[in-house]
Length: 126
Image (tube, rainbow, N blue to C red; front, side):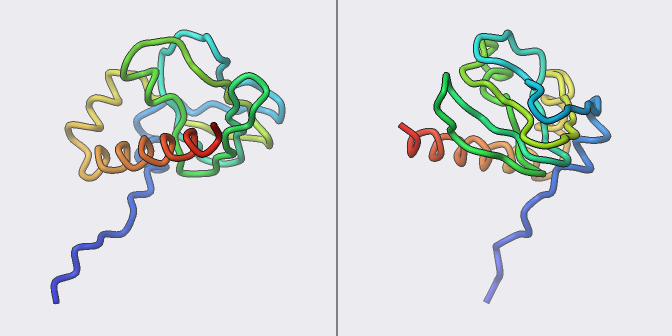
């Protein structure tokens, strides 16, 4: 029987090479609700708490993304992302994001999976 299931893409190495690596201390805001987007982020190490106003939506870990929606629609951030621990993130601007979607195998599938996960998590938090 043909096996169609593929190993999930670990975007940390790709993101590290595409983006600018930034470091945050516990309690530092990566971005705040209402900020204008300039990039999306891939968490390389650590944990980040995502919340809207005072409601925690989720805590994300290495290999997960932040800020894809705002990068795509260029609207203000709808959540705050704050480091729960020491974090290393790759900041990827729109030009490099588009390059990855068009040229990096399976990257667009990873993006869609991240967006689907975020939608389900947000709906569950409502």
